[in-house]
Length: 148
Image (cartoon, one colour):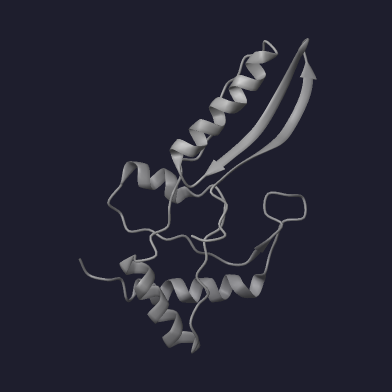
């Protein structure tokens, strides 16, 4: 999608303990090969300093399918329920869809939810009104799941 960040990394934590320096960074990508290439670059830089690198806790990539049958159904349900076209967008985040898609590659998946501000920070908050709207929308969607 135009304007969507494909691959990124952040330096999250640097700490010294037991005569070692531990560095944690979070890599995200919608394309696994791009994330792996970034990891190789990071590993090469630390190897120049004689450091060992260990990767763990990664989410696999997931590319949203904008032609998804469930997405089209949800657009119709939303329009019928709220009288307007929903905003459809992709965000640069680690999502469970990547994990599930690795196990069930033929599943038709989307990710949606209530409005969350400042995720994964001490200031994280959810807009309560959007939780109710999300729940009602989910129930209506489940009544209209496309047949295979």
